[in-house]
Structures are given as structure tokens and as C-alpha cells.
Image (tube, rainbow, N blue to C red; front, side):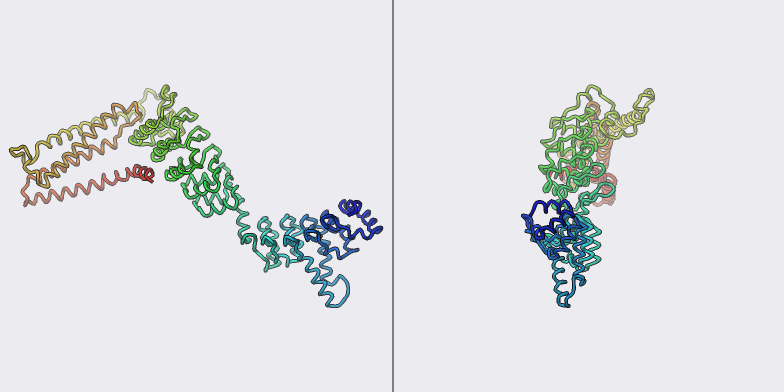
Length: 581
């Protein structure tokens, strides 16, 4: 193409263009290296006056195509040249309505068919002009084409995309609505067997609500593994999107203990497992803080989470610290036994996990003793700062991030230092309870020890109990031995707690010693019943009454003491099941 011609067409110099064409009319037929005509160039640069002059002088150029089979209308639609597109559509519509000149009806039909083919002309990619306009986001051109040529909505390109699908994918609801209004028979399909609904759903995946939650957040929170997998396969980048509080969908899955969802994230987006919220907490922190022991157990089996076991949050707390602060005995034991968990790490307040457990009121005495023993067995130590300072328990809990129970400001400030606190009063009361329990347990142990040698029926000449073969006698000896054993256990617990409890940070195990002493008391009563029953005549009704009374006591024991103890043991059983899983 002549350089002067090219320059005046691309710059929009109408006067110079007309002058050149008047001098050399053949310039209208020149093309570029890609076979673009002067009309293609005018359409590309949106020069309507030049385009009108070209179509006036040479109407056949409307049908000319370049090396990619693009007409001038394709370029106008692709580049958003609305004014040129309006003119070209106007030319087509005039000829379709008979404005292109005379001739018979057959000629009109032929012209109409030719112009119809121009509008629906496809290029090498099978794209119509509407495909180009919608794909490139030129709404004005697209709306013009849909209104004047609704049949364009019935074409799909080489990839299988219809204009409606592309509009839905672009989230252009105005074009979608216009296409559906003017052509109810439009195609709805898209690439890879998808349709308009697929495109709309995928677009909404990126639209957060007022809290910053995406559909992925809701799916992860509800544990919808299939939905999470579908979303991540289409848009993996959504795994790294956080809400207004800096929380990702993975954090929510950890919080709710959604193991299947956590595994899906680890499989499809493994590096997303390292995401932290605004307080530098990982999904593992969230799972531990919300007592999701089973989820924590499974997360530790995944390589993507395993390297996060010692990661500290903004307060310096590792997941092990968080387990101690939340009072989750099962998770604490799990982490304390894990070889990759460092037990000596201090948080920013200077506390190790050992310090927090010793000062926590969220553990029972046996949980605390077992936790400390497990931690120290695996190398945990106390923070030097706490060993030297010996801070009050209430202050330690506050600095560790745990709420301080029932401690007023006056108690911590020392304003009422001379006035006995509620804690001191309780301590005095439990000291008296401990003394009373020790006395009762000692008496029971003494009585049952003597009863083991002063058996009903006495001994024969060989020093063997004469009634040893009787069923009641065997029960008598069994109950007597149990009573002595429980009483001795209660004495041992009371003695060793008083001896080592203060240094170890343990409280008096009032529930356990009361339970042990109560059991020993009941078994002593049962032993007395069996002892009196064995001495009775076997045909005596008194023996039947004794047995019925015995069964009544057993039933009472199961209902009032046994069942609560079973429920109290569920935590330990849960821990065992997790460790054996």
C-alpha cells in the first residue's frame, strides 16, 4: 500500500484521502501485507467519513476480507469503532430493505442473501462480528449488532463459544439480557461442554459479600468437599483470597475441623497451607484453638501442614501454646508427643507451654500432672523468667492470653492485702476437707485390714478359713480387699499431693480423693453384708433380704456415681482413640 495513502487513512485526513483517490482511483484496491484494504484501516481507526467515502465509491469492499478472513466489520467490532460499525450496518440494512437500487424480486433476494452472509460472515476462528465485540468488551458495538442482527446470537465459534456464553463470562448482564430478549433461540453453549450457567457461576466465585467471604469460604466452612474441589480446579487463585479479617477459606476449614476440605487444599494448592491471618495464625492454629483434635491429628499427617507445627503467631504462640491456653488436653498430648514439635519455645510474654499448663485453671489435676510429665519427658522446660519471678497465677494467666477467673482488680493490685481473699478462704476449707478425708480413709483402711484376718466362721486346725468355699465368703473377701485398696489409694493421693503439690503447681484433687474414699466406704458396707449373709442359715429369708438390699445398693452406685465417672472419662478415651487411629 502506498505510504501516503496509508498515512492519510490511519490519521483520518479526509481531504488528503479524497485528493489521492481522485488522482489515482486504483488506490482503493491497494492492500497491506495482511491483505487489509483501506476500508479495514478506516474501520480499525474509527474514521467514519473515510469509510463512507470508500463504500460510496466501491460498495463491494464491504465484502473484502484480509488474510484472517476478517471483514472491515470484524475489525470495527473487535476494536470498538462504533461510528464505523454504525455506518457499515446501515449500509447492510439499506440493501436488505431494498434501498440498494432497483431490479426485480430475484435480485432483491440475491442482495439480501449476500448481505445476510456479510453480517454472519465468520473468520478463520469461526468468530462472527458479535463474538469479537463481546469478547473485547465493546458493549456499544455489541448492542448495535444484537438489535440489528439478532441472528448472530445463533452462531458458535471454533472453540464452541456462543456470544451469549462470552457475555456471561464477561459478566456483562446487559448484553446477556439483550440477546435473550431479541433471540429466544440463541445458543447457550461454551467451550468444553460448558454453558451460560457455568460461566455465570464461575464469575460469581470472585464476588465477595459484605464480610469479604467468597463462595469458597462458605463451601469450606460447611465442609462441602466437592464444591471446594470444583472451585479450586477452575480458580486456584481463590485459595489465597482473605476476607475482611484476613481469614482465608483454609482457616475456616481448620476452625470447623473439615478434614476432607483440608486435604483438598493440601492436594490442589499445597502452598496455601502456609497462609496466615491478620494475627499470623495458620489454619493449624485455628484448628487447635477450636479443639478440633481429629483435624489436628490428620493435619499432622500432611506434609503441607507438618512444617507449621512450630510457627508462632503475632503473640509468639505456637500451636502447642494455643493448646495449653485453650485447655485442650487431647490436642496438647498429641502435640507434646510429636517429634517435630519444639517444647522449649517461649512466646513474647516469656512463657513456655510448661509454664502455661502449670498455671492454667482449664485442666483438672490429673490432666495437669499428666501434661507436665509428658512435656518434661519430651524435653520441655520452664521459662527462666517465671522460675525467678514466681509470679502469681492470675498474672501468669493474663500474660499468657487466658482469661483470669474471678480475680478482681483489687486482689491483683494488693489494695486488700490484709483482707483474706476468696481463694484463701477456699484453700482453708479444702484443707479441712483434706484432713477429714484422711481421717475417714485411715479408719476404713484400719477396719478392712483387720476384717481380712478376722473372717466369718473362723479358721480350722490348719489355719484355713472354714467357709472359704461359700460364694458369700468369696464376695466378702473381694469387697473387703477393694475397700482397703481404695482407702489406701485415697490416703496416698492426699499424702503425696500435700508433699509435692505446691512445687509442681497442682491443686488438691478433691473430686478424686472423695471418689476413692466413697468407693472404699461402699465396698466396706458390701463386705459387711456379705459377712453377715455367710454366717446365716442358707434357708433363712434374712439372707434373701440381704441380697436384695445388696442389689439395690449396686444399682444406686451405678446411677449416682458410676455413670458420671464414665462420662468424666470420655476425654481420656477420646485421646486414646485418636492416638490409635
